Amino acid sequence: MATAVAPDPAAGPRRLGLPHRKACDCPAHHLNCLTAKEWIKAQLGVWQFSYERRDIRDKALHPATYPIALARRCIELFTHRGELVLDPFVGSGTTLVAAQDAERNAVGFDLQKRYIDLSHSRLTPSSTSQQLAVCDDARNISRYLEAETVSLILTSPPYANLLNRRRKNKSRRGRERKNGQYLKVEQYSQDPRDLGLLPLEAYAAEMESIFRSMLPLLRPGAHAVVNVPDMWWEGERVLIHVALIRALQSAGYEVRNIIIWDRTNIVNRLGIFGWPSNYITMGVTFEYLLDFIRPPATA
Ligand SMILES: C[S@@+](CC[C@H](N)C(=O)[O-])C[C@H]1O[C@@H](n2cnc3c(N)ncnc32)[C@H](O)[C@@H]1O
Image (cartoon, rainbow, N blue to C red; front, side, top):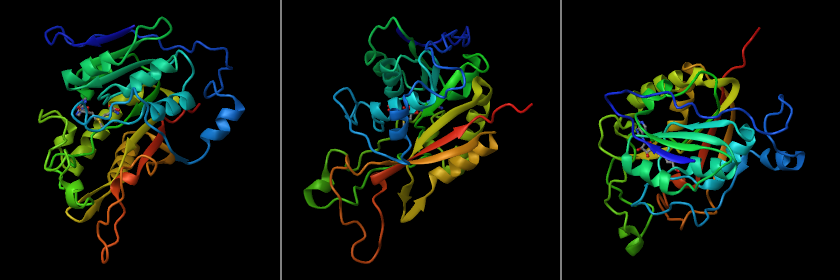
């Protein structure tokens, strides 16, 4: 069942009571339902994905989506069928679509009603799992879920305030530069609760607090995967991934892996930004998948 939920503010959020127990026959100590052959493929530390027809690539619908295939790889690697996936910044609902494909239950949160509706429209009725899109601030998530019911947090959060500016397309030349995105602000909203309005330091503090509030929801030993790029701002490299690693470590998570999402197969065209005197890599050619765990309980 796919549902869009807009809680009645007067009533306050309610526990969602989503199914979260594994529905497969794998032994309890297995990390996932993968065969040995599938596991080998997932062991490479650099991943590539292609978009498919169901992916949202229209920036007018949502400015920053990841591919369904990326979400599915993470879900199949870190959960069993029937378990519960949480995306605190669900955007267009890609995590929910992948969870449905993989027969996992899932819940996603976003501030914007239009993204909740978009998420809902991408889901089909299912009898084997439930996916739910909830219109609320990620700061409130712990009110909706029971402790230790989530088997994976998977998300691509806002990138501090780095999209909240007019695009100048500096890596493009000629007519390419003045494409449909030129001088547009591709930030999700100007809602004061939107993390995409915050400068890096304030953003990292909020992320720390949100991830701290979600830690008790995660099963001990379970994974939290965060997808972010670094970006250029006024000629300087902004290390969003470093700020996030520090924030999540302070919130009690352990770093497990850093995976590179190699996007060279999907970038449109390389530019000559910086040539011939200033070497600079194009920001969009790779992003990070920061893989954390909730430390397992110690006896
Ligand atoms: C990078 S996008 C997620 C995109 C998603 N992975 C997809 O494939 O569509 C980040 C999302 O976070 C949402 N957001 C920003 N601040 C938020 C907050 N405080 N609580 C919940 N969602 C928030 C934005 O509206 C935006 O849709």
